[in-house]
Length: 251
Ligand SMILES: NC(=O)c1ccc[n+]([C@@H]2O[C@H](COP(=O)([O-])OP(=O)(O)OC[C@H]3O[C@@H](n4cnc5c(N)ncnc54)[C@H](OP(=O)(O)O)[C@@H]3O)[C@@H](O)[C@H]2O)c1
Image 1: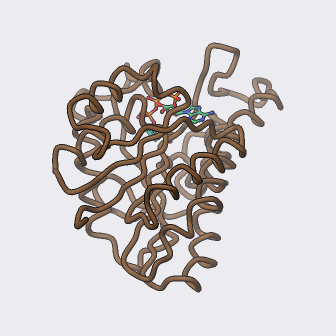
Image 2: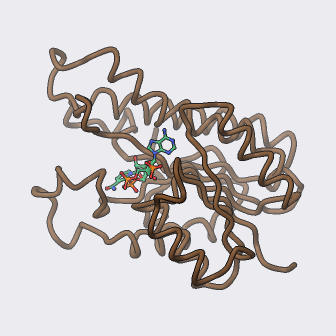
């Protein structure tokens, strides 16, 4: 098979779903797509009907359960012995159980910090832990974790959003640290964080009012930009964080 093999975690909605759609449309890849409950992800199910199970494999994966990551790894390994690209998309900024970006120190709740770290930091590094051996085959391969500019410590001019900022900063540190270890296994592996810009998804929806219309991307636009950035990456870029336009973000 000469098609590339791509794994997209968090593919049930938002940016992950748009990324899966884009790579299938481009006709360059077979995709393994994960969601916590793929059968309940209508968009993914429709894509599988359109493109077929050979092009789109669907797997359940819950980042909060390491066993579920290990099980997905076994299922991918039963079908494929290598991947060319893995994109981890999951992110948590708010939920309907009391998690909301903090405005001030008084808003900090340890349980919300813990929840944010599980999805934004621990989850992405566990994906690398379990799947890296499929990507360190010695040829060009990319591990990309969707991160956020607000995870940059040097770029923090506004404050607030303690849990999201700190967990994304931790994610970026995990990416850098893994990039150093994995370079020893494959010089051709590129391990990066990517900031997608502000994108019209459930994650950003409550915060879009102050975003100028032309700065708000559709998930389809953002997916095209991110795949363009990934295509241009070289091994020297490994360990770094880039925005949707391919510009490096300082940690
Ligand atoms: N949208 C923006 O403006 C923006 C800006 C900067 C950075 N980002 C980053 O871009 C990435 C994608 O965000 P989005 O806008 O597409 O968000 P979204 O539409 O809210 O989607 C969130 C994703 O996270 C997944 N997820 C949540 N908890 C999970 C868990 N326990 N296990 C596995 N997956 C879980 C969801 O999967 P389920 O469908 O299974 O729930 C869903 O795929 C995130 O990392 C986010 O931080 C987004």
